[in-house]
Image (cartoon, rainbow, N blue to C red; front, side):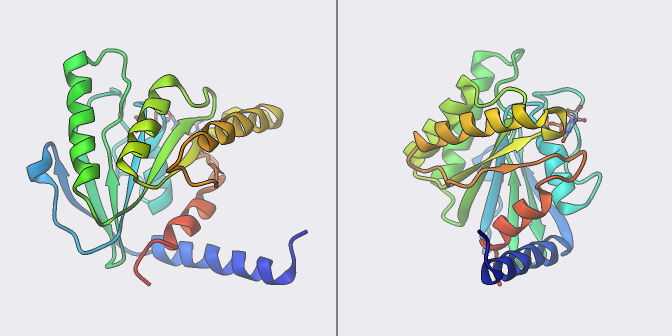
Length: 216
Ligand code: GDP
């Protein structure tokens, strides 16, 4: 049972999330290679996921801006890491989507190389938010990325997307399956957030989680 204190803590965390994401969000730069990655003095959170997982929609829903991360109609096209700054408090890095079927082996190797170089050389990186399509649950390519993050010892958190498409029982199933997968990984954060960019489900919770990583 939730007591009064934990209800107050929760309300406070949600409020901190709201305030953080009400800050001006400014596009900093797109980086196609390691040289393009901007230096930063802010803590950073990176968003990763398969192409079409709903990453652009989620970043837009979090920041409350419609056009910040372009919702791509051609999955697999964006090969850059896009950096955004939330006031003077947090940097957001939108990583290129992976796993698009029509992308060649060479392209996909380039993804891994850029991401690994980024992960290894980014001491400001506090967490990766790894998006999982709730209609599919963790797919083999998602699990490969989880293994990569484990190896790089980067703390990450799984977030389900598009939960508006599921019936409650289906959501429970995929939550259980996703939690079970995350328990098999050393660097995975135990908390799972179920979101919908469409209805706003879970957006305030995810903002609250990320606010804990920002500069006060
Ligand atoms: P990205 O490739 O990961 O950036 O994915 P997008 O944000 O471009 O979304 C891919 C597709 O999924 C688009 O057609 C979106 O309209 C749709 N989509 C994204 N988020 C949601 C959601 O929360 N609910 C529903 N029903 N559709 C979504």
